[in-house]
Length: 407
Image (cartoon, rainbow, N blue to C red; front, side, top):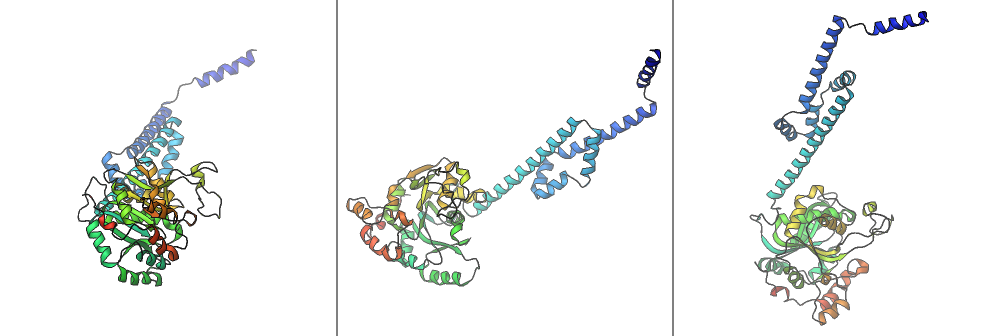
């Protein structure tokens, strides 16, 4: 028994032996250097606000280089080997917060640049007057394409004034009407030259810095509103397709009801099904964002014609870089406005059917502001039928000249 307990007593004595002076000195020196390293790391991460602002003023990439030098891996290795795990986690948390702070600063700077760009172009909200822009009551932008010259001519022969009448309507009544088109994928090509020739003759186009394409309508709508609000200081901005019949007098009179109401969105409000099946018309690639299969969209104006007030057009102009584009442009506009304090006006006069519907309403004294066929998302065979529809449902050539835009 004595033979067994004696070695154990010797081991306890060895463990209780005090550290040598040299070992204490080495431990103190190591602790000192680790403290310096930690202190240096915290100095980098907790630089004064002025330094952070200076870094964020430069490129975001440069800011990250300043935070994480080339020898940072070696520093982290020493930190992990010589420090408490809690200290390492604190350092990771501080680094994460610094990165988030820089990202937020970059995002803020991008938004400020967008606002300044909009200011220079007159694209501010209604509370800040636009200097030097022509005044108007409404800007009517007719969405058109390179292949739609016959459609444009059918409108010029019916409800879109030509030449001097167009200028007079703009000057005397504050009603601006333009065909809205971008450019082809090869700027300066045959398609663009054809529009140049047509524009020289009619002078009724609004040209956008946008590549035309059916699947780019959301982008075109966004660019149109931004360009329109930067060109005219109007109370309302309308988008209408080139296969829709419009009575300009009735349209302006209905919009005039909401002139003093801020943030107005006028159209035929609908809530159609979200189509998740590929290959069908109006397929929604991001259908999962709208909930389970079979769900419907939020309320939004149908895409044939709608109007928004100046403050909403300004909002679109200022926030262009961060407005998400869905496959369908009417859904995109509805999405941009759904989370704002906006008055949605469901005006069924903007979506009458073609004769006999709009003709009967006219005979009853309820002239429609716009007419089209739901089955064709516009007037079916509009080039052939536009003149007859105008004859049956038109308000008369003098109606628009009786409109008085209140100051």
